[in-house]
Length: 270
Image 1 (cartoon, rainbow, N blue to C red):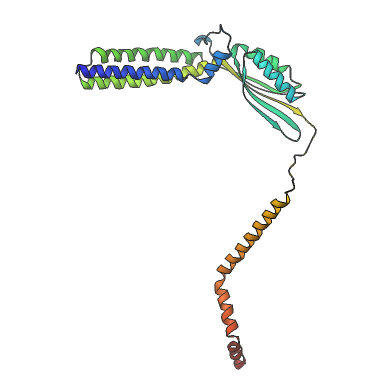
Image 2 (image 1 turned 90 degrees about the vertical axis):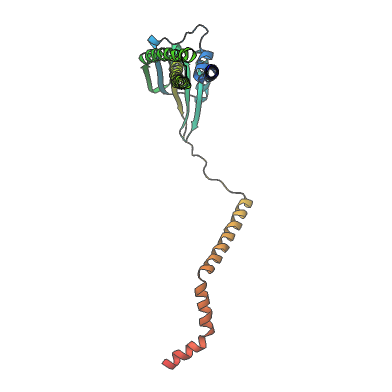
């Protein structure tokens, strides 16, 4: 029995160690980026002041190309980065849409700096979400679950006497560990959203109307190939038609073969 307890304990410790390594390796990309783009003395978000900031901003510029370069430089100056960009050109307008992530302490100053590029502002919407209460609740639940897990580990080490006791303790530890990992994952997600604010920015410029080129001339060989394919399709269609009307074809042959007899019958009747 002691051998079984020792093996179970070693297995459990090994699983916990591997889970910890996996959790460390699965730190969210946003958290790593936040650490990279934040100032060296920045601290983790305080649970008492955990605010998620988001903005939607659209304005007209004189030149999308020039303003794009200026905005990229401004974002970099504020320790932020452009997560994605989408440039679109239509007949009367050129536009560029950005998703920008920036340390929350630089959110307001970045918004003001980018606004200097605007000729006309279509909208500027800022949303904040206070997640301090959820922060505190998760941390409190984590502390409680870890204490309960540690008590089960102590039971497994010192008080489990039978295989049944060992299995029950291991099952409880497994369930608690999964719940702890889920809570820690949610906490890391909130930390990333609080540390890095998100700005959805769209800039555009009006251009003189120009029709999109939608008509083109096919080369001779392309048209010749298409003509050959069309002729082959027509030939196949005719052959399929003949296959489908073969009874009429046979009936016509019979009528032609018996035409004298048919005429004689009709003449005699008259």
